[in-house]
Amino acid sequence: MSKVIKGGTIVTADRSWKADVLIEGEKIVEIGENLKGDEVIDASDAYVIPGGIDPHTHLEMPFMGTTAAETFESGTYAAAAGGTTMLVDFCLPGEDGSLLSAMDEWDRKSAPQICVDIGYHMAVTDWNERIFEEMPEVVKRGVNTFKHFMAYKGALMVQDDEMFASFKRCAEIGALPLVHAENGDIVAELQQKYLAMGVTGPEGHAYSRPPEVEGEAANRAIMIADAAGVPLYIVHVSCEQAHEAIRRARQKGMRVYGEPLIQHLTLDETEYFNKDWEYAARRVMSPPFRDKSHQDSLWAGLMAGSLQVVATDHAAFTTEQKHMGDGDFTRIPNGTGGLEERLSVLWTRGVETGRLTPEEFVAVTSTNIAKILNIYPRKGAVAVGADADVVVWDPKARKTISAATQKSIIDYNVFEGMEVTGLPRFTLSRGEVVWSAGQNVPPRPGRGRFVPRPAFPSAHKALSKWKALTAPRKIERDPRNIPSGV
Ligand code: URP
Ligand code: ZN
Ligand code: ZN
Ligand code: ZN
Image (cartoon, rainbow, N blue to C red; front, side, top):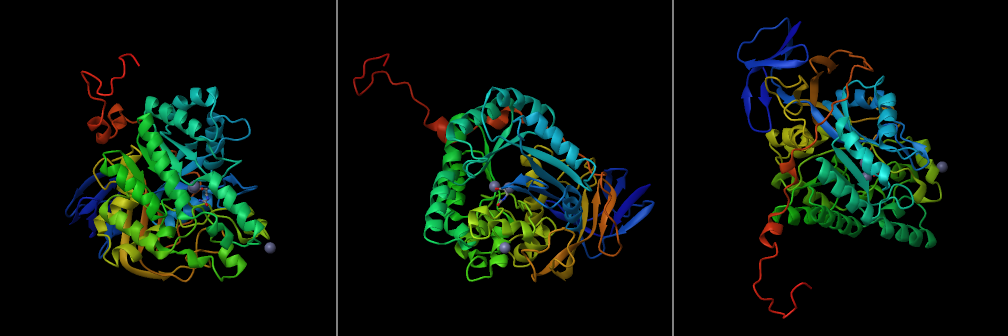
């Protein structure tokens, strides 16, 4: 049974043109005019784009004394409903500390539930001989990224020496390190300071994680990566200070990537202040929402290319779970949702406003991350031979975001009441329609697959031009008269 997506305008990260897309089984087999297939999918007055890839989710993640309530089934169904056909979830090692057991556990949880394709990032939350030995095995099993938390002191946080060791290992085995950049020591101290001052509500979360702690950590991680000779990907970049560190590094020739979230691009710190407790607590995430000047910086970064990817960091907890932090903001589970809303909100606030072209929208929601994660053009492309992960995007369709109609099983939505323009008409995952705006397409848990990502080629390790330019030159006679051999 072939399918033809007919009458639409294909938009890739490079260009847009009118053509039909023919799908056989799971793959795109032809792109051209007047194509015929057994089944016709109507794309008239619509764009045909590569399915969104959300590179940052935490489904069913054990965290802060509870477990994220969004399941692999509800999360991947919400993704499909929003035009996202692949997500990359964070694997956290359990009690035994083994990375390989963590992967087994994530496979066990996700495989029977997923409605679209997934991949993993592996968290390195400790450093020892076993982790060193297991890292190449993790890569062999299709996970080429390792995440390091510079925050969450006493829990997930790693020290600089551990990060340096892990980054060097990443360089050796062709993997890409990721960091959550916040200075966890400073955050822990500020948290105690605000609690002692009697600030116990969600606003204390924002006060205790100012942009400086993120800028410092981003800069430190970049320098450690440079010393280790490895590229770096910084997740949830929320402020000018971190963005500035990334810009500076890139300008010097370092391969550093930055990922803002749709939440930080569109919601600001006033969400925490003078709001009722539940409203604010539902929006507690790390880093916190910032003032509007930081949003301008993030948008500028997407427009200029110094930031490459828009993600969600979907880590969704119910209101009841948020109440674990009654009387102490440090116990409010950190995280918000956005899997279903990412594309629509970005289209509305990015493309409709003229900040991004449709091609740039495709780049930051799909193609760039497919390239960064080494799965392009199997994913992130509308091209012959690519997986038929395709969205028929209706740029004129409108809705008001509401928890009452979302696919997420969380009891609220941080974008509640936002009017969006631009929605998926159809979402296809490997050739199968997994979402239709006009018909009820129920979730098909278990149909999604794990997508292995190969190790990076050795050229990926090449680092900063700046380093090459300033490499020690051969000095005939040391001008400081330091004896040779010292
Ligand atoms: O608040 C957040 N971001 N929660 C999820 C874990 C993380 O830091 O990414
Ligand atoms: Zn994080
Ligand atoms: Zn996260
Ligand atoms: Zn309560």
